[in-house]
Length: 429
Ligand SMILES: *Cc1c(COP(=O)(O)O)cnc(C)c1O
Image (cartoon, rainbow, N blue to C red):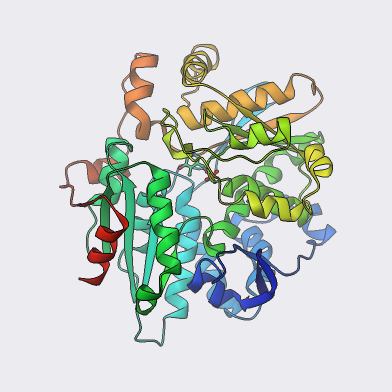
């Protein structure tokens, strides 16, 4: 499979090159040059397939012969070493829990897949790759865990100082080995800007920089898997399906739309956002006008300029009318989010965290006029990662899962930086 740059269709590279580059040299995001629908047979029999079998069939066309079948199966198996339960919250509304992996956020899926692809590509090389990642919360921990000890790869994580939760910070600052955490005096967008700038910096060519944000296709593509897993469970109801994704960089929802392109029968997508409402505003007035991000309690979605939105536009040929048929986007305040966490627990006994609650709000809003549908939201993180919000609201004490317990008592190790120059100095020494 070839991938082209969204800035220039003539710039085409292999899967391996796209993974290693992260971003095309012209700053464009990579996009697969062709998509083939999965067979009818696949969808007819999906309930008889394991998650691993589904994922292998979904991903295979995107890799082609660049990774041998047996090897790719092993990568998929290792990626999906945990469960993806679909939990009923109330009549016709389900939560697809993506938080049962090692760092308890959905980003474990992409990070585990990507690290294993890179390890495969490095199998006979002596060179090092440096994975750079900007995180608004969860990416850092998932990438740190997914890449820990991977041969030939150094990982550098940039995170906004004071703007991630304590558990998130521990997850990305305590592993050490090939992982380094840089604590940036700024917001998430400052971290992301430094990463983007570094990729284009001629001085840093020798470092073989790549990204592990959802701009990297090996992080992004496997995020399709769980939309298929949800379909496998919900197919039996024979009703139109709506999915709501709590959205920040729009990687998840973009993967869901790609899954639909492969034939997955999802009828509508809702991008639910917090106060960072660039896309909801775009759908209202047709003007894409990114703003710098503002801090909210659903901090992993504090993104002012969602990277993957250009991929979504590509899939709809920039046709707003077509796009609006499949897609809605709504923004919710922290107050609404908190109230919702409280109400979901009070009415249904389900503990949601802020991102999932935003997803629930968007789903409910979309379903008001669509009573014949079934909806599911992506619950993107475990509530324990946001215990400072969740516990006081619900007046409960959440048990600490073993994955989290194991990092809590480790010592934070980070390097403070403020400017891009600090960042370069660090890289070069
Ligand atoms: C990253 C993240 C999101 C946002 O996902 P995107 O794919 O960037 O839209 C939502 N919730 C949590 C918990 C996250 O970590």
